[in-house]
Length: 574
Ligand code: PEP
Ligand code: MG
Image (tube, rainbow, N blue to C red; front, side, top):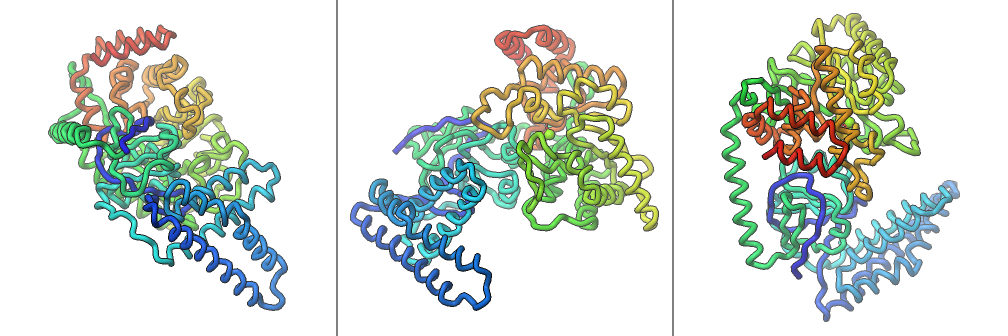
């Protein structure tokens, strides 16, 4: 059946491929239709699997070693009760009959419903029982997959696969970097969530906020991700398909044309040079940075080295990663941001329980609370500093004493290296991220202490507008053009420039083509963005009349009417 879903585009372009359903519960199950006359067989398959798990429980119970803790027997009992409860043993077969879907899919659907119910329970003990439900479901799934599973539709090559998920954590996304998928779509998430940022860094079309995609799309179904319009077309008819194939090849021609600008210096029409830097998450992203001809790395999000693992990377491992990046960039600067963990980038087994993680122990706050971890990173950075042009960037600053404490720890790290007879660069510029309104409003206290600033507009918008950047329920309120945001951005650029403090923008606004001229008009001369956006931004810079841009940008700042602001920006981009 042909239908269209609307979402928010996080990465432009068009891709045509086949859906690959991914579950965040780590339960990757297919979704396919069962023929009318196979429904009873499918239900029988489910019942056999439940019976198999029942036998497994009985066998485990019969062999509990004497002297084992009482909780062990109790846990088996709880699991057996969950298995026998009609919500798990009777509802999935009913779903198979009603929706003509495969048993695995019916089971996971029902599990997600149950887990949701558990999550709304106030009692923390009962709430945690959702993990037991997931474990029992996992066992039944394994048993199901061990039975004669009807063959799922043949999957296409990886580059033609479109990942369809309810939600993906940044840690999941970073794993996808190893693959070559054709596109991503998720039901939830905001356009500047870290997951979306990673999808953008892959340079493939991606949409978030589809709401029900994961439930209505089937494994292997043909889909078109239109990142230009923000729509997903499921099972397109031949005419629509042909039209999209045409548009796709036109976009590819434009992309190839942009490549010619790789070595052209970025400057506005009057010859004002503009620095275009790139953002990276992992050392292997450097290949893309070099391909785009970036003049430096403006943001290395080092925390991604710390995700998807049970242990923390040690000094040696971190040193090698930072050294590799520094060496690959040669004399071009690399801005290494110190760990920004916490919030949606939690470390494995992190013991800090926070009621409101985005406002809790995140970034510099986390590092100052864990000085040994921070010192290890600082030593690794210092050691790598002799291999290139490293700069250090401190995230999420609010208080001047956070800078003072970080600088004291940096001195301590140097001392530790001195004692070991290890050398480091004589002077490493230290900068701070301006991403909390308080820091933007109290800029001089940071300029006095730091060598450069970088505007993290993703968080600056989140904290100015009180919009969780990862929450699609409020994504429509997340607005880079809100007059308060524009005032803070323009004011920071102007105050820093007047004082001679270098200032960059490294949030997603820097890679947004619609905002390039506005930022140039505010006085910005250093942009840091995903390498995939760099050449398009360069093309826009090359065609910009700075004087005219300045005048229009001032008019934007004087306006507090959203409609007028949008009109002026359209004029800027005309
Ligand atoms: C930002 O907040 O704009 C930023 C660049 O940092 P991150 O997206 O990693 O929070
Ligand atoms: Mg940030």
